[in-house]
Image: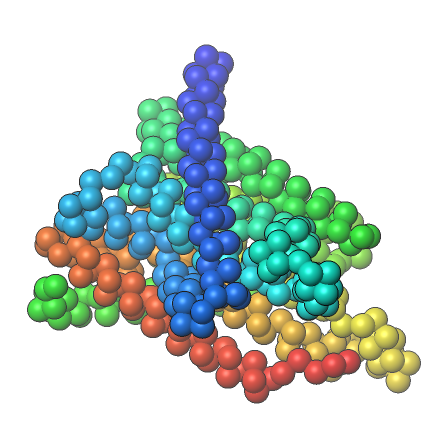
Amino acid sequence: MTTAMLMSSGMYLAQGALVTIGLSLGIIAVATVAGMLLALLRLYSWKPLGLLAAAYGLVARGVPLLVLLIGSYFSLPYLGLDLPLWLVVVLVGGLYFGAYVAEVFRAALAAVPRTQWDAGRALGMRRVQLFTIVILPQARRLSLPPYLNVALVAVKNTSLVSAIGGWELVAAGREIGERTMEILPAYLAVAAFYFVICFSISQIGRHVEKKMRYV
Amino acid sequence: MNLAFILNNAPLLMEGAAMTVALAIGALLGATLGGGVVAFLRMSRHAPLRYVATGFVEIMRNTPILVQIFVLYFGLPTLGVHMSAFTSAVLAMSLQNSAYIGEIYRAGLVSIHPRQREAALALGMMPGMALRVILLPQALRRVLPPLGNQLIIIIKDTSVASTIAVAELTQASKLLLDRSAAPYETFLTVALIYLAISAGVAGVLKLAEWRYPVRAS
């Protein structure tokens, strides 16, 4: 392999990595909103709605993401919805990881001591006020390390997009492997790109956790 | 809904489900053994062994299982190492989950108070015996719940083996999809089968946790 080939292959993989990062950010954004909603439903809403949210969590966490991706990508056109692949990935991935994020938020919200609610109530705060000013900031700090862990799994799972015909880091690696016949180095390079992204996330998580221990 | 189509193809789906379970069992066996090795090395007295184990754990946890399977199945043949798709998938999942399960074992052992070991040694036990009789039985109970969670993840990850055409459940559903125009029936059925497998395993694990509760030490 010449230097020029190495350079252009590296650039090509970097483009794939950008798509991977973009998809991950979209999935994590949707998952955060969906997870917050599900956690609130489970903790503070009318009981039947809470049970529905719990059932959704059990189903979403019991089925592989790949099955959900294949299923929705090929079923949606039959139902008259012709969405672009990236949008299907962001929505389905977001709703799937939303179930995991919901567990993280629920645990963090439940871990804020009950006395915090009592104290806020005693000060005459309204429920919404109390939740946003007192409870949420404390829960946010508690939830950060496990939340980053879900984000890391989400990044790794964007690799499944290549299995339904999408173009991202793995697909870029496959093309380079086929073009140069250097299949093993190509996939190892793909793994290295994932490692850089994911290791950064886990290091941030570790840093936050260490800081929390002394608070 | 086209139920007849699903019923006609039930044998194909059941064979797929059996292959999914076989993959999961293979990966679980490999990873429970490999996890032991990883935990042993991570807690070793010799720094180089610890570094090697830590590096292995970080690499396995920070790269996708799909890429690991591709490296084994498409990459290794260029070095003259050939494996079947099934072997590649089981080996890749065993390696990745060795890292996760090794950390679970380690956390379980570390969570046992050091005084338990001191007390065992004070009673005249050899270090090996203290580990076997005092530490491991306590650690195993604490390890059971996270180990169960990991097993559910393994079951779901077996679906990735469909990308190298292992004839498991997801692959079976893709075959049915090519053959028919019944996509959502097929995928609802497959999702239900996965759900049934994970729910069954989760139920058994709840029973095991109830039978072997964590005792305060």
